[in-house]
Amino acid sequence: MSSEIFQSIVLGAVQGITEFFPISSTAHLVLIPWIFGWHGVTESMSFDIALHAGTLIALLIYFFKDWLDILLSKHKLLIYLIVATIPAAIAGKLLDKFVEETLRSPLVIAASLVVVGVFMTYVERVGAKQKSVQDMDMYDSILVGISQAIAIIPGVSRSGITISTAMMLNQKREEAARFSFLMSAPVVAGAVLLHGLKILHGESAGFDLGVFLCGVIASFISGLLAIKFLITFFKKYSLRTFVYYRFALAGVIVLLLWLKL
Image (tube, rainbow, N blue to C red):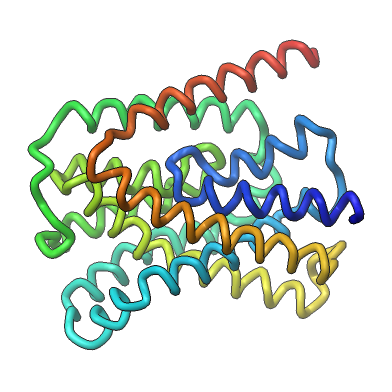
């Protein structure tokens, strides 16, 4: 097994878990190569997006019945999902290059991990949290959609900030997670399509089909397991475990930055 194939499988497995755990997949995909000194195709934004294809497939398979139900009968929820997708789509289109060239730094990630961790702690302490996805309104979908747009910043965590925002609007934790996972599918699909077209047009350097494919398969398998675990986990347990992890990871990043000075 080549080193790049090994890196691809490791990063794919990490992507599948951290895409849905509220600890930021982008942060881990940037930090792991940085910590271990990995360079090459697995360090590129295109590879990161390819891994999202695996988690997208996991989302579509796990929530297949939900999507079918939404498309056939729950048209109000479909509209809310579309509305919630718009801010992130705009942010991705306008800021994609800026984020890739400027914000993918360990220091930005550490700050984002802490700030959103504080927000997650706050929402666990306030609100009745009695609403379900069916109780959402347009105001809720717009606010959750804006929060998803903010998740373009590495370290924020799309699931972390969208679940927390939905909980702040008094959604039950497991219902907030379900809506977060559902609304991520169109955004992830758009990002995969956008970067896929760049690869087809030769705009993405270092594309290696074998390396990318191994990563996608690994992210699909781990992503499917992560979704199943979290839907059950959030029925009983809070976000605090993930907050502690975020703070610890931010501390490790700052320490490593200090040691490298």
